[in-house]
View 1: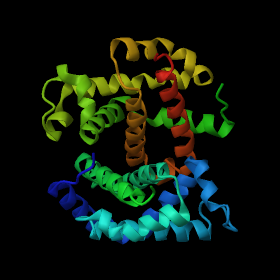
View 2 (view 1 turned 90 degrees about the vertical axis):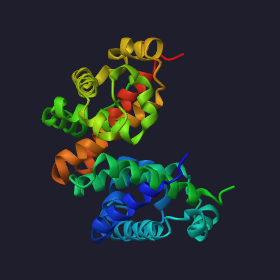
View 3 (view 1 turned 180 degrees about the vertical axis):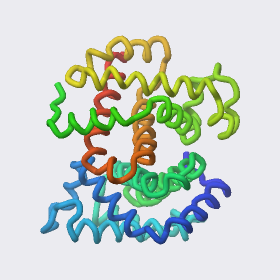
View 4 (view 1 turned 135 degrees about the vertical axis):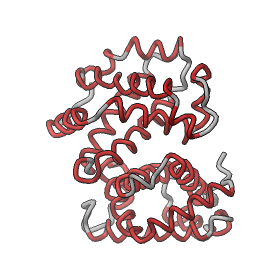
Length: 144
Length: 148
């Protein structure tokens, strides 16, 4: 389903260049919203001393995840190959149900819409949605 | 039956009070048709949907967006019995319109993105997003209830 066209990739790269300065904020806020709006996702973080959505572990993790997204942008021409190790991590160690990638992606788009309402045009929206879906597929590659 | 906390009720009614159906509705429907182009299958009679600009400028899309968004009014007014309030609408979407119910979920996500962009972080907080998305999930479920 999700093959990124040349136009998609250009749109994603151009938009990312505009927003990458706020990547940490986007990461922290996306993760926080995910934990609040989809409480079932908290099950993956039972090991955190501080479970609050704006606590230190959550904020740090939001940054970690968003760093991964930034990395994926740089590997946009071959996500499957570029994310192989991350996929193995998610498949064998973290074992996050891939349905959650979609949930986090939605929250990223909500935060991006909040922070960049003018720049997040329908064109950018579709390209980013496709990109995050491709990213999710690449992350799920090694699951089975 | 769905249980709403006082905070959720307040968040939903407050947010709904701020939403301009004539503004958010057209935006949300246009974005649906652009971001998920297969949804255009239901709008063959709407004229030109061939480009994003065409979709964004299409008056039938705008009018229908307003209609759909306006349909949420009934749900806000009947928050404790959305399922029964939407029985006829559900039957219509199934028997007459033949809309895959997954589209309701997808449109709900797009509506939330539009609302987020419009109202920003101080209004559309994480807690408000939680209440709003819970409300939309109930609406989505009610719309799919009469399918068989």
